[in-house]
Length: 479
Image (cartoon, rainbow, N blue to C red; front, side):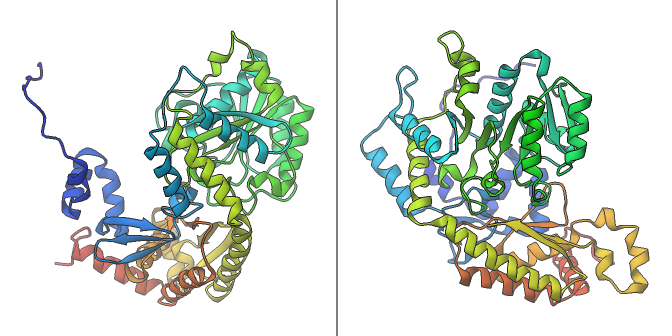
């Protein structure tokens, strides 16, 4: 049936309209036009009750004046915090001078300067830069470059268990998630090995001569903040060299200073053939990704007049204001010595969490991380119950996985105005990625809030959660 044509100008919302929408208005529009399923999750966590008015530094602010301490950090996108004054000033100057964003027919001084900065920061001959708009796009570019160099005879990709590299077709194919992969048709030239297992990798390389590409997260994020075993990446590098395999390290989440070094692989003194960046590269204000490759690889794949378009950037890759934002973000990172603050504050945070683990051993299973990329893994709910109930509840642990994490995350926001994140694969892990500007006092605020909630005990957490859900009619009340 044809859609009837209605002449005239559509009634569109203006920018002012959007800024003045109430929480009820936003709820209606979000559920109608974005994601009703996501709204249900927000509702369970109580995150649907918040409408942010503005943000600055370490805090979100509601119109009422309530401020929320941000330990979520946009999954690592906010190294400089919200609306860093130097980032705002750089973007304002760019706009006031009416600088160009899109000029595809000409060379860009802004993309060129950003590429130079990234090449200067990166070690060795990692000096050829591809600019794009997201981490997934950077991973796609890395996989394509590696496959182009290796050719059809060695185009099989080896990736790690519990990996997350993105949701576009190629990156999804090397993302180890049945949920995300769903029923999508994925690329076939791939094989999986356990993360951290050198022996398994060597066996795969010996068995499959077509393997020519390996992709790893230097620190796994979606898996629950998994730092590789000491020496693992060095052994991976040796095996890749031995079997002529190109090594891609995905630093979309853990790069740009998140672990206390610009690249997380610097802790292990290894150098990849290709590295990907995104998230904090945009200074909290721009969507940008980057692939940095060794020069000989890039020249082999795309270095001529006939081949450069094969790996050419997209329309919005390297646009002006995005590039100057990233340029300023890199300068702020070094000028304000934020990687040193990350190392010091990361140590303080991990030390405080380890003390809480000793205090609440039946609740906290493990604390792990590097710099300000930290995971707190909680026990299954049965572990925290009295001995007489553990065996009965243990049969439900899989269905209840993530419950304690959810109870605590909800209470942190509702009772203490602290926002945290969770991980995709291990629902028992709370993810912390606060901006690198975080202070000791703000970390202590978070630790004290977490201590207070854990001190309530599991029964109290469950009771509070159930009552709040019943009050909102999300869970049924007793008749």
